[in-house]
Each structure stands twice: as structure tokens, then as C-alpha cells.
Length: 248
Image 1: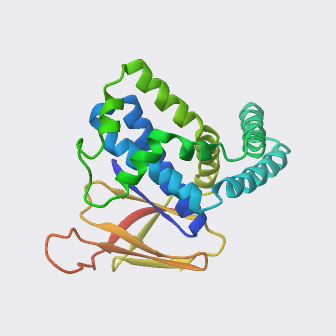
Image 2 (image 1 turned 30 degrees about the vertical axis):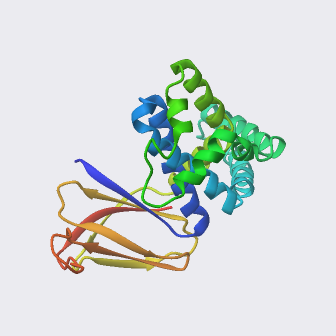
């Protein structure tokens, strides 16, 4: 059965993680495609990553998360039926990423010192979008040899590499904290205790004509299912609802 996956963070740290994960996917996707066509998405995502890292201590949070993961991996290594090869691989990766984050400090700050990026960021911050006549420096860059453009992008993204890989590893293990279970409600509404949870993951059949809206925090959360917005106003679903839920 084809499903749609919805995820909802239950604290600000996980909210930033999910936001950054999506932004990194946009940057990587644009970098691998025709940048002359996708440059607006690429730079918007890149600048959003920089702003998020500037506002929050993502590096510090990731170091704490990786150190906790490292401790757990050591404990799990004592289990009799553990996959020692996979565990050792993840342990080495975790230790390496912690060392990179501690030693290299905030390498992404060098992006703010790049003259081209600094000049573009000012224009991209203006509401209403921009055009080629607003950004002659961008037009000049986009008309450089492909190898030069690719080299610039590679160097920029390399400064974010340790953040991206650390984030991916931490989120992978957060998502593996819980399996999906099938739940049915009679009224299109569900709530439960959120103590100790970081992330909710919901799977709904693609054919289902409703979607979840989620609110909550680390103490309690609620899921209300909505009908498609074909008319004005909020349309709550009052029908029996089936979905899968993983409490991570």
C-alpha cells in the first residue's frame, strides 16, 4: 500500500533538525541539476541554512546528540544478538563526526565571509523575489564555465558537510526509536501522552481523503484529521480514521 509520511517535532531542537534536513535536500538536488534553472531554490535554501545555524546552537546540540548516541552504541554492543559489523561502523562514524564538530568548530561561518554570497544574500532577503537586473553579479557567475560553477558549489557545501552528516546520523537513530503501529479512531481525532518523545511519524494511505494536523509538546500531543480545503474554513474529518503512528 502506498502511503504518505508526515512527521512532526515535539521540541524546538527537532524542529530545527527537520527544517535543516529538508533544506539540505533542496541544496543537494539543485546542485546536482542545472543550476542556471534552479539557482533561486538553491540560494534560498543555502541562505536559510546559514540563518538557522546562526540563530541556534545546532553544532552544540549535535555534539550532545552524537555523544549520547556513542554511549548507547557502546551499551548496545553488549547485547548477544547485535549486528557487530553495523554497530562498529556506526560507532566509528559517530566518533569521527564528534571529533570533526569539536576540532573544526563552525566552518560554515566562512560562508558569511564569501563576497559573492554576502552580496546575493542581501538581495535574496528582499520580499517579492528578484530578477537578473537586480543581481548582475549572479548573472555573471551563472555564465562562468560549468567547472568553475561546480567547484564553487562544492567548496560552499563542503563547509556544511560535517553538520549535514551529523544531522543525518542523529535523525536516523531518532527515527529508529519506534516502530509503526496501526491505530483506528472513530472521530478523526487522537491524543496521547508525549512524555519522553521527540518526534511523531504518521503514515496514511495515499488514497485516503484526509491529512493530519498535529499539535503538542513533550507532555501531550493531539492529532486531528482534516478534509481537503476545497471550500473556505476548516473542515474537520469526523469519520472513522486509520493510520500508522511511530512515537519516536
